[in-house]
Image (tube, rainbow, N blue to C red):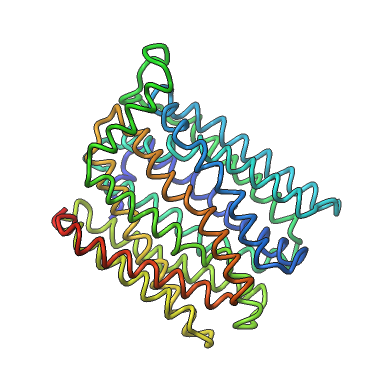
Length: 399
């Protein structure tokens, strides 16, 4: 289950990333509550999510080109320092009561720009740390780190918001980036697939990467599944403060528990994948987890009982992580080294780049028809799409 952690560089990087991700989730919960307190608007919750993710849609392909041309570790050092500076800026503005919704929106855009160049390098650097033999396990353990932080971060945030305020949560996030920055300086990797930047133009690189994706139908279908999950499925997260406050009436502490339950389920799903390793029936597992995800999302939308909502979120988190991580594994295993950064940038374009549109749609639907109806619409849309893919592209089940 933890075989890739025997590789020293990956172990150092993984631990640093885990600490940083916990800080990021602490800030995410505190920021959502701050926006809700300032505006009491479902639409603005969705709109801030839109602004945070739209740069990924616009710039992640260029981030993929850089990942294939330059040293990925150096790119990540720059992006992590940038994230740290933005976290401290939010903390200072909040502490001195200067923060406004417009400032939160501006910082969300800047965070999104940094993420557009961070994510392709972060995704595609894993193989350089562990090699292809350990790649499936390492990808699963990256999900373990991400989803462990989804449990720990919101639970800590629920306490810290009351104890030290939202600005304190933002300061903690800023300091947490030091862990991954120190880890990046401590590792020593030999880049694979990187080419001198002067060999061809960046636009030619970008075009070649898109042609490669276009000429591989399996890659296109897998990326489409990720896009639908991001567009209609995971936008429930930005609506969670309203669901916690208005539907379940459990307040900020209940919000932390709800977010942690989704993270707990995701952690279970990631551990299952880590244990399975290079599983032979990825296609069947992909479709099964996709349908479980959409069904659990519909149950969550219908629920008015706190315990049922918590249970549904465990399945939502677990099934979504299994589906998306399986696609990540398949792509990184099958794609040649020289194209990995660009293919992963397309993966991030659909995974995170579709989020702004999903958040905007969810926020608008919640404002007009209520938060439960918005989440229900997302679950139904995912179910319909998965049925179509299952019928039209049966070969995916054989992966």
